[in-house]
Image (cartoon, rainbow, N blue to C red):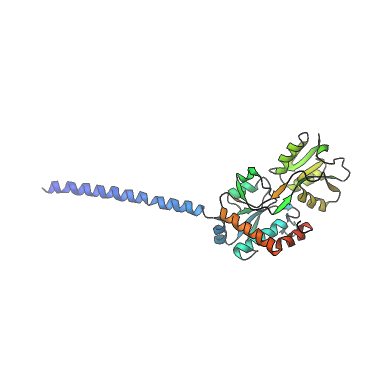
Length: 276
């Protein structure tokens, strides 16, 4: 009789073990989903938890984002807008980290989480909209050509067989191949390298947005812009795809700056005049 009673007890222990094992397996799921939720936090929440905004900016673009080799400071129109965004979110414009980006590296850095936002003379295009979301337009530029003052080049029609310098990952490199298919396009990693190559005679023209070329011309008046603007280049701030709350936050900043006159002040400070 005792042997008969022991068998159900053993079965009971086995059943309980299986039940407990099943429960412990179930508790792994909330933990995993909690990790996913953490990764899915919005940019604004991450910025506030971190206590600083990380903005991807140019270091080689006079007027918009240029690093002073002597002081190490980065200054320009884009930099001041970055500081205004940090002030809006964190109440202090100094709570910001500026990370250098180029036309080629900026989208991967945003997607990898290395930066919170791209504020770097970035043209809004349909192709880029597939990878990132954009703020409202904050500056209107147009592509042009920079050549030596004594150059025979007067515009796109003069570029057949000419070496034209551009920057990797830029819309300018794409545009010039479409609009001047007989030109030879040489691409460089950044604007500084491209301008240095132009001065060294490695090309006869450099093409990018007019306002960037004006910044180069201001450092060396032996060059001039020719041919006028042959594209429209609306600049936007780029944000990780799907982060609508951060897009709205940035657009609120732009509207506030324009309504208060702060945008006009920065425009005049860096670009020489108030916007039309």
